[in-house]
Image (cartoon, rainbow, N blue to C red; front, top):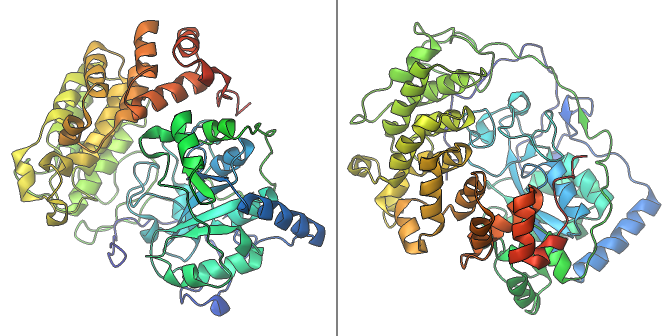
Length: 529
């Protein structure tokens, strides 16, 4: 839908020359030219495989294909950020059979694993994968580093994933996010010799790959159990396992593995040599007149060299709420806000500017840019623990601003008007979860108790995020047990995972009292040790 857009703002200049062989973009497997194996970052060519290892791998794959096979959506995100090698490996460590992976192609033709249309929710970048070069992606920091991930974890290449796939006999559900990648993906599957690993392909974006006679698709037993956290409900898991088909898809493999009587395997280290280090420093963006406008994806904190104003001034430089804001000014403001949040402390005056930016977020007809500055301001307020901002954040989440009618996308007119502000609201609720105060606690309590119809009037459902945020507050055991017994499966599942993976005496006691079966689930708390 957005493949033809030219988002010129997401360009940066590298501080050192990088020589790579680019992948041919023709879509023809025969014309594919692999990148040089010595290029920095994750590998783009696969190492040779011993014949004995290949035979053993295919034997293990045949057993997995016989089912029932547990497929983990984007990898096990309780153990590492989604769509990373660490998350895929963790899924296999905890007795999954394979993973669903999201494939995109960078501006210079590298196939990488990344789900979102926009970079900013998961990384410090602004823009899309398709408009960034591979080295620009490497320059971005993840917004969260946890579990088995490290400060160097980045979106991996498809080639690096396929080497992990071979080592772990991992089944693959290929979710190809843009059309036109069939031939390039097929060439890598050929090079890896892993056609028998592929069990599902989305037909709308990769029809040629889905029809390839080398692909032997399997059937899912039902819709993804991760929807509404049914994957954390043993009854729902058992019910789906009784249905025809070979596959079940979950966000977390532990309950399905428990129902199937599987024991978690020992943690297997990632294969060595899948990633080479890259230059640590990148230069500032090239000076550019505002009208031509490439904003940097990343770079050192400080002033924009191509603006007369300082980066702090951009917090108040965006037009008033009544005006539809030009794209470049929204992005500039979002980048300025991110830089404001980089130091350990921010001033009271800056907090007031951030609050104003949440409330007077920019209007734009394209959902990719509407409210991008307000969302970034909410993230910084949460990151810095600005508890005084909690009442304003609550009001921002509750409102359905009539001004949204000016920019509501006709394609989504069936959704409530308030959903037009979803980018801001998807950042506001996690921010409230980080602010340990009465205003946050009361709103989060109210939200997790809302009927689904009422919650949908405010924004797309965020029961899981609200539950995690509420458990970040100081709650008595009785209230934790209430969450663990909730009739809302999304609330109950999120509460179970939080108590299992982030244990504390009161949470452990509540878990044993309310859902004793979950006490035996292995915890992600020690996965990184």
